[in-house]
Amino acid sequence: MKDIGLWDEGDWLAVIAVVVLGAFLTVGAMIAASKKPEFAGHPRGLYMLFFAEMWERFSYYGMRALLIFYLTQHWLFSDGKSNLIYGAYTSLVYITPVLGGYLADRYLGQRKAVLFGGVLLSLGHLFMAFEGTGGQSDPTINIFWFALALIIVGSGFLKANISVMVGQLYRLTDMRRDAAYTIFYMGINVGAALGTILVGYLGQTVGWAYGFGLAGIGMVAGLIVFVLGKKVLLGAGEAPEPLARSKEMTIYGIGLAAVAVMWALVQYQDVIQTLLIISGFALLGWVLFQAFRLDKEPRERIFAILFLIALNPLFWGLFEQAGGSFNLYTDRYVDIGGVPASVFQSINPIYIILFAPVFAALWQWLGKRGLEPSAPAKFALALAQVGLGFLVFVWGAKSVGMETMTPVIFVFLLYLLHTTGELCLSPVGLSAMNRLAPSFMASLIMGAWFYMTAVGNFVAGKIGEATGGESGEMTKEATLAIYNEIGWITLGVAVVVLALSPIVKRWMHLDTLRDRPSDVAGAEELGEAQAAGVHPEPKPAS
Image (cartoon, rainbow, N blue to C red; front, side):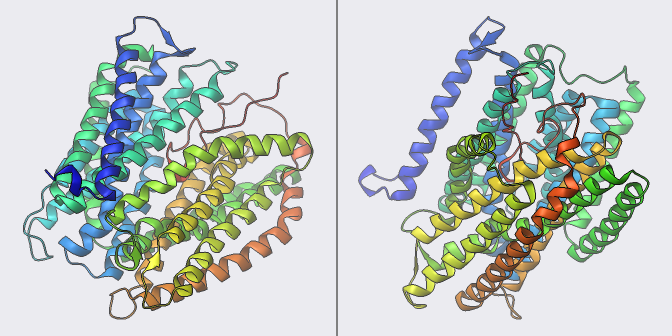
C-alpha cells in the first residue's frame, strides 16, 4: 500500500470511485431493508434491477477497458490483430441478444434468462483472471478464449432481457415508466463509469488477475442481488406459459453449445466477417421482400428504416475506436500523468449521465416550437460530431508537434463530441425503429438495428487493425493519418445524409402514424451506454 503522500492522480481517482460506489451501496442497503412496497415513488423491484444491472455493467465495461491491453501486453498479439479480436468480440456481444431475447420471449421468461446469463457471465469474468505465463504459446490462452465465449453468450441471455423487466413492473398507462427507465439508465452508466475506473486501475497498476478478478466479483454481486431480490419483482419476467423441465434443460443446453461455437468464432475473425456479410444480405433481402408486399406508406417507412440502419456501421465503427486503437493511442502517446489509460474509458458514461437529460429536454423544447430536427437530420449531426471528434483530436496532436505527447484535453474533447453524437443517434434510432416498423415486423427491425450495431463493432476492429499498418504495430503518424481520413470521410457522409434528410423524412409519413398498443421505446433494447435508448421522452398529456 502506497504512502498517501505518494499517491498520484490514478490513486486518487480510484479512491473517489470507491467512495461513490460505497455511497450507492449504502442507499441500496437502505432500500433492501425497507419493508415498504415502494421507495421514492417507484416499486422496490426497479432498484433491485438497477443494482443488478449496475454490477453487470461494472464488470463488462471494466473488462472491456482492459481487454486491448491484455491482448497486446500479456498475450502478445500485434496491435492490429488485437484490435481485430476486440472488434470480433464486441460484435458477437451485440448479436447474441437476438437469440437470448427470442428464447426468453417464447420459452424461459426474462427472469430465468437473466439468471442463466448471469451465471455464464460470472464464470466468464472469473475465468478472465487466469493469466498463465502469457504469450500465444501458453496453453492458458484457451481459458481466455473460453472466458470470452462465456461472456458473449451470457450477455446474450442477460442484456436484452433485464431492461424488459423494468417495463413489466408498470402498467402500459403508468406515467412513471419513463422516469423508471431514466433511473435504470443512470444505473447502467454509473456501473460503467465505476467499473472502468476500478477494474482498469487494478488491472494496469496491480495485475491483470486483480482487475479481472474484481470484474468477476462485481458480476457475482449482481447475480446475488438478482437472486435475493426475486420477491420484489412481483412476478415480472416469468415464463409466458409453464415450461416442461426437459424443454428448459434443452434451452440451457443450447446456450452451452453456443459457448463452444463462440469459443471458435472469436479466434477466427475472418469467419465472423463472412457470416456477417452473408447474413446481412439475407436480412436485407427479407426486409425488402416484406416491404414490397406493403402499401405505399408502410413500404416507404421501411425504406426510411433501412436508410437509418445503414448508417449504424459507420457511426459505431468510428465510435468503438474508444476501447481499441484510441485506448492504445492514449496509453502510448498522450500525456496522462499517473492515470492508467484504461480509466479514460469512464469519460463516455460520465458524459452520458451529465448530458442525456439535457438532450432529452432540448429535443422537447425544440419540438414544442416546431424546430426539432428530423431523425435523419439527427443522424447527420451524429456523424458530423463523431467525425469532427477525430479531426479535432488530430489537429490537437499535431499542433504541439509530433515529437510531443498529445495534451490530455484533446482526449476529453474527442469523447465529448463522440458522446453528444451518440445521444443524437442511439436513442433517436431506437425510437425511430419502434415508431416506424409495422407491428408484425417490430422484433425483426429491432434485431436488424442491433445486428448493424454488431457490424459496426466489427468494422471498428478492421479500422483498428489498419492503425497497425503492414507490421501490425501502431505508430503515432499512421494512426493520426487514419483518424484524419475517417474524420473527413464521415463529415462528407454527414453532409450527404443531411441533404437527403427531407426525402427520408417524407418516407417516414409521420403525419399519418397512429398509436398502437406497445411498450415504450427502450423496453426491449439493450440497456447500456453505447446502444441504449432507455431515456425516452415523456409522453404528452392526453
